[in-house]
Amino acid sequence: MAEPRKHMNFADVKARRGKLTPQEQNKLIKDGLDVLPDIYRYATTGFASIAESDFERLKWYGVYRQKPKSSGYFMLRTKIPGGRLNSTQAKVIAGIVEKYARGFCDVTTRQTFQMHWLRIEDIPDIFGQLNSVGMTTSGACGDDTRNVVGCPVAGVDKHEIFDATEFNRAISDYMTFNRDFSNMPRKYKISVSGCHLHCAQPDINCLGFFGVIKKDGTRGFGVKVGGGLSAAPHMAQVLPIFIPLDVKQVIEVLHHISALYRDEGYRDARTCARIKFLMADWGPVKFTAELEKRIGRKLEVGEDWVFPKDPETDHFGVHEQKQAGLNYLAISCLGGRISADKLRQIAELAEKYGDGQISATNKQNIIILNVPKPNLPALLKECDDRNLLYKSSEFRKGGVSCTGIEFCNLAVAETKNRLMLLVEQLEEMHPNFDRKIRFHFSGCPSACGQHQIADIGFRGKTFSENGMDLDGFDMFLGGGLGADRKFNQLVFIKIPSRDLHHYVSRVISFYDTNKSNGESFKDFFTRTGRDKCEAELKQVQQTLATAALPKAA
Figure 1 (tube, rainbow, N blue to C red):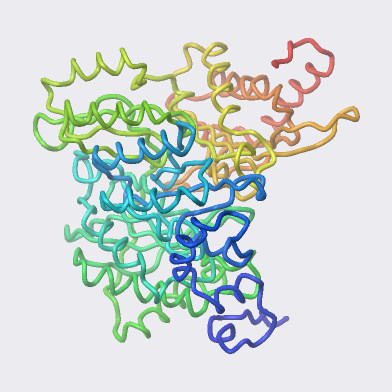
Figure 2: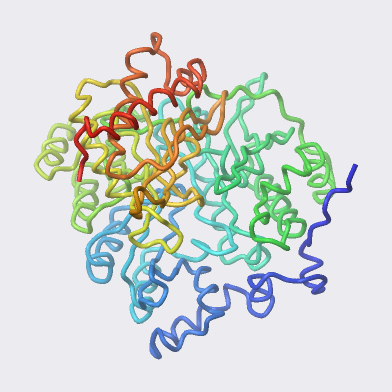
C-alpha cells in the first residue's frame, strides 16, 4: 500500500522547504494585516499604483477586485458576528451603499453585507464610518478568520438550548486582528450557536461549536471540525469532547484547534489547504489526541449527541420570543439583494417599533427583533406600505444565491436575477404549493451559494448548443443538513438558463404529486431515487426540443 502523501505544513513554509505557492510566498513577505497603511496610501495615489502583490493582501480587510479585475472597482465585505447589528450600524451601511455602491448591497450567507462599485479612493472614508459604529472588515476575506456565524435569533428564540451570543462575540473578538492566526493555510470559517436546530450550519464550517445537553442536563458545546463546500465538499466530523459554558475554556479549545490548522494544514496546494482535508486524513480520534496534546490535558468526553432532523429554517413572518410580550419579524431580501433605501427603512422600523436590534440571516434575509406585541399591527402595516415582504411563497422563502457573473471573477452564470425570475415563474406556475423547498444558486464550482446542501441546487455552466454559446446550470437534487445530512446528487447537466423554470417546475410537480404525507423533498428524493428524477427531466428536454413549450426570454 502506498504511503500517504507528505504535505507541506507551516514549519516547512517558514523554512522554505519545497516549492511554495505564490500565495504562501506573498504571505511570508508581508502579513495580510500589514497592508492597512498601504490601503490609505493607495487611496491617494490611485488604482494604477497598487502593487500586484498587494491586491491579494487587500482581502485581509475585506476588499476584493471586482470583475473585470482591471475595472478599478472593488467589492467590500463587512464583519458582523452572528449577523447581529443595531439600527445605527445598519443606517451607516445604508449611507455608505447609497454614496459609494450605486445604491444596493447584498446580505451574504455568512450574515454580513457585501457592497460593490467601490474605488480605492473611497475605502478610507468607508473604514472610518464603519469603525465609528464599532464595525470592521478585518478578516472578512483572505486566509484569515471569516465572519463568525450564529443563530440570528440567539437570545430570543423560545426553543434554544442556550444563548450563545456571548461566546460568538468572544470568539470573533479573539480572532480579529490576531496575528497568531492571520496567516492560515486558507480561509477559516467558524460557526457558534446554542440553537436547537443547529441553523448556524456547523456541518459545513471549518469549526463549529454547537449547543448540546448532556444526559445529566448539563448544557455546553459539542464541536465539529472539517466542514466545507467548494469543488470538494466535506461534512464536518464530531470531536468526542464536551466544552462547558465557560468563555475561557471555549477560547482555549478555539486557540488550539486554530493553531493545529495553522501549523499542520496543507500549504503546498490551494486546492487542498482547507482544514477539511486535514480532518479527512486524520479523523476525529487523531485530531482530538493532537488537540489534547497541545492543551496539555484530557478534555471532558462527549456523548452521542442527538442532531435535529431538519436544521433549515427561514424565520419568515412574526414569531413570539422567549421574552414575554416580545416578537420578531423576518423580512425577505431574496438572494440577499437589498437597496440602501430599504435597508434604511428596516433600520428605522426597528427603532420605531422595537429597540433597534436587527439580524442578518444565513438565508440572506433580515430580522427585526424585540417588537412589543401592541406594536405589531402598525409595524406590519408599514411593511405592507413599503413593500417589505414578511409573508411569502415557499419558493421565495427558500431562495439563496451567490454574487454570480455580475461581479465575481470566477462565476460563469448570472445567479441573483435568475433566482428572482425563477421564483416569480414558479409562483405563477404553482400558486398553491405549500411545502418547504430550498433553491440555492452558485455561479461556479466554488459553491458560495451553498448549492450542494439545497433541495434543488444549481451550479453555473457554459456550453454550446447548435453552435451557440449558452450560459446555464447543472441541477443537483436531494441535499440537506441535520441528522440525515447529505450532499445532493448531480442529476441533470447543461440546462439553458432560459429553460430553467420548465425543468424546476417538472421536479416540483413530480414531488407534489408523489410525496407521502409530511415527506420532505430530501426524503422524497432518497426514496424515489436519482434515476426516476432524471427521467422526468429528460422528458422536459425532449419536449423542449420539439418546441412544444414556450421558451422564456
